[in-house]
Length: 333
Image (cartoon, rainbow, N blue to C red; front, side):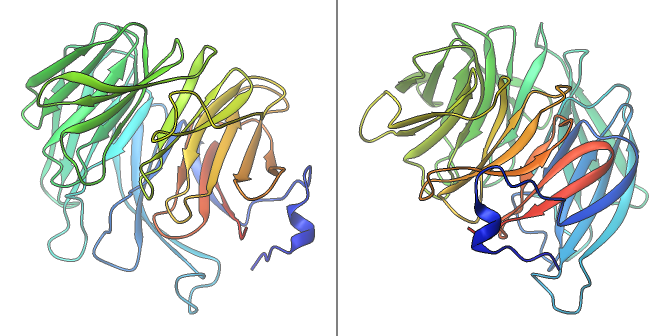
């Protein structure tokens, strides 16, 4: 097991992944399910050029009988195009009759809702309506009966599981990220490329609060679901943090990457921990782990970074996709 000491946390220290899992193709998207699977293992899905693989992960930090990581592929699903975004349904569980549901976005501007019992029954429902590239999507987290998606077509759309488009929110620039409040099913956060983050009341279909980056393009934003007064984002080469009870402008703003920053994701295990990545394809792209109590980030990985970045539901562990592999980094900060 790779252990982290205070010495490891100094700025500029580059680490090898704590765990690595081999894949058959380039991984464009990877997502831990943010919901319990009903078993000790976590659900994970990763997508490549024409496939989605669903697997379970169990780490030795969770079970002392595991050596490193126990990674089991449950099923590979054919996907017509490269997977560009993926979201898990809270209905996905393994403890009773296995039931898997997730939704993907691809370059043909369509969402695909995949439902499977991992045996005989397998259904794909195609949802059409967006007129440009879909950047992000999320399930309503309490019951999983709705999906929100944001697109370069300047809309956020809310769909039901039959593929009906129930709500369309008109945006002022491309929609980049969308997050659903963990308990309030009618509260949605939408981040726009021009640097604005808005919170919507879906009943009134109106914005109730907005935040301003003060710069653009905003590339990624995330709502801290363990403490919903915190919002984080990356714009240009900077990361930004808001306390939404205090101001519409960021409380903290710091440079993160030499090249442009690409992704921002809060840890689900620690409200002060978050990760940022540089742009995919850059020679010096990095995964950086930041802690609000530490003045400097930790350089976790320095390599060509793929599009995927996701945090484990309960561990301070994140995963990145890459060329024929998944890389997992455990951090103790």
